[in-house]
Image (cartoon, rainbow, N blue to C red; front, side, top):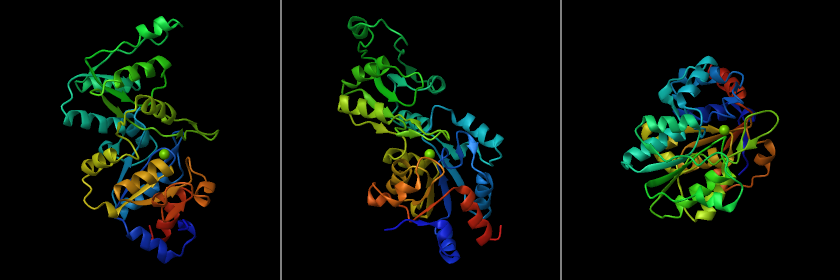
Length: 306
Ligand SMILES: [Mg+2]
């Protein structure tokens, strides 16, 4: 199947596409903004969909910024969005741990704000190893001792990630009774015009392969995150939801897993070459791609007289 540029198909086909869904879920980074700079007319585009009676909500894999801060930034950038309309892996993790009534200590590799929020929810956190240790094996082994009270390893994005933190996670994961919960494991962080930053994927892969453990991933493209979002947003008919994202594996894969319609934008991580030379599973293919939300806004503004 050839993926068509939505901007280049006839008006009838564009209208048919827009009529095929009754609500939208959007990824944030690479879709509505790049490096926190909004895509031109993205906020207007979202308003226009709402005028058409289609609610818009946001699904990000970025959890190191609390949803409240993300919300504030979007409001400052003139996006008309409610806090409840933003979900991130942190919220899914809290929801999951509460559902299973998790009581033991959590060893969390995540941002300070993430860990503080977990504590404020009443969860007990294991202490972090020192940021710097003496550079010899004796010191290494002393700092990666097991603690039976730790019942879960939580792995998310941590700017201050160290080798010792990963080693300590591995110690806990050797116990099969220790839960393994993760957030996003994206390959790239599409945060700037100078190119991507290294994402969480490579350390995630190292931890899963070395421990032999399959984590409960509460982030795109996992089915666990899909279940959380479906419940949280009370989605009754996934086939009538459009998911807009900039990453093939994380976003299109997630939409496929969830049974949503898909639209790929080229304003983030994915460039036109990856669309033309498709190297991903066939079922991840969207019917359409579009340059960005600026172009999508032009289409709906013209066709629907907004
Ligand atoms: Mg993205």
